[in-house]
Amino acid sequence: MTRLSVNLNKVCLVRNSRGGNHPDPLAIARICLDAGAAGLTLHPRADARHARLDDVIAFMTLPEVASGAAELNVEGDLRPELMRCALEAGAHQFTVVPVTPGEVTSSRGWRAYDDHEALAAAVRFFNGQMRVSVFCDATKTSVAYAARAGADAVEFYTGAFAQAYGTPDGEALLEDLGVAADYARELGLRIHAGHDLDTVNLPACLARLRPDEVSIGHAIMAEALVDGFEAVVKRYLAVTAG
Ligand SMILES: CC(=O)[C@@H](O)[C@H](O)COP(=O)(O)O
Ligand SMILES: NCC(=O)COP(=O)(O)O
Image 1 (cartoon, rainbow, N blue to C red):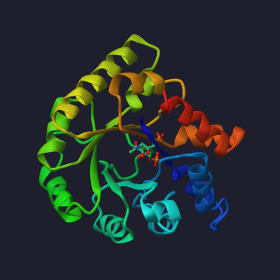
Image 2: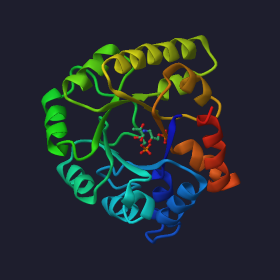
Image 3: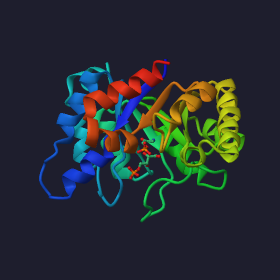
Image 4: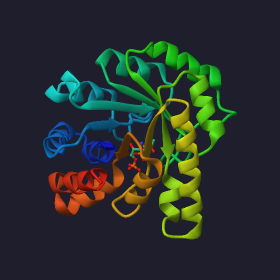
């Protein structure tokens, strides 16, 4: 069964908008775990627009996360302070995401021309103390690039597929994702997927990629504004349970 990791970046964004601690991301994380989420994801960007390094440390105080019964996935670029924070906090996974400063959100995975040595050095830095996942485009080249760096997993960027879902382009993008996922599985990598997934496009993604994990944030936040996190996390768990 595919694990659901709930990305709480956008709860942190609302929290930051007034400079206090309301809504408290830790309280929302508690609700998500109680609802059955297998893990939590935070993407502390350099501009601290939403998740921050102290949120990583705070999330590790949740009993299920501290024990490893639920996982904390820290996403981000290869900033030394972020990598050090994730390692020292004891996070379970680091997902390496290519970041363009000032971007609105992630829009691609690692590509062959990106700095391979930096990626390989990051894998060496984590030294098996946590799983390293590489945010990838839906290409065999991107997957091979991650495998060559020693990654444990690849997370496929599903944004383009999600935005084209229900069109012939969306079908083609899904097949690209599926072919890349099949190749990653042949190489022994864990398969993850994320970005702009929601209850409409998720079933097709699950059926074709058969991912070990999906990380979903924006759609869960948007729906939780109406229905609350407990109900929405259970809604997504019903989809990932197949
Ligand atoms: C890697 C990925 O697709 C998402 O985690 C994305 O990075 C979220 O970033 P924002 O929440 O800042 O849009
Ligand atoms: N890695 C994807 C993620 O954590 C959440 O992406 P989104 O659902 O907020 O687009």
